[in-house]
Length: 174
Image 1: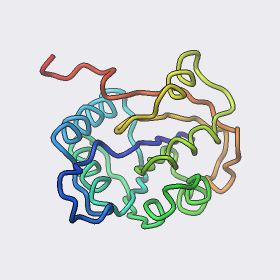
Image 2 (image 1 turned 60 degrees about the horizontal axis):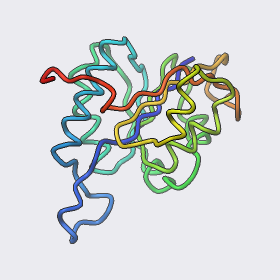
Image 3 (image 1 turned 120 degrees about the horizontal axis):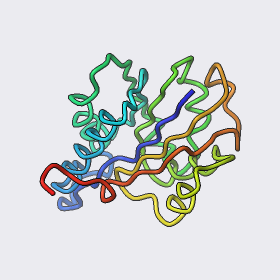
Image 4 (image 1 turned 180 degrees about the vertical axis):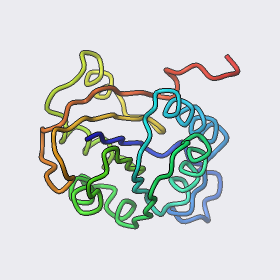
């Protein structure tokens, strides 16, 4: 089974009156979300289930991914992905992941990063050092597991197959 851990794209801090949960994406975030969407499509990283935080920035990131995902996916908005964004997401993955062969979690840091570290047992040569350097907005950790149901997810049982950041990818404008 495969887990796609995607941190939301860059958000806008311009309106100090907005609650944190209501912050939208900024222009750079919108572009990065589309860059990552194209990457997911081109690399055939197609989730059958997407668990997404209820924050404005995660929902806007998701909205930019969807046109690039050619297959049907079950999408569940989960408020705990926002409210527990300081924690590891593993319990939420076990609870909501079911038997999805490819599961995407679209959330926040530090939980996205902490979850990736907690689940990584082995890693592709450059993936873990790159992820340890920084887990920026719109970054994607791809982990593979030898399990048949997400309820079996355990610490250190995943293989970090790759770690991808928007700045590492060339856009159509480059």
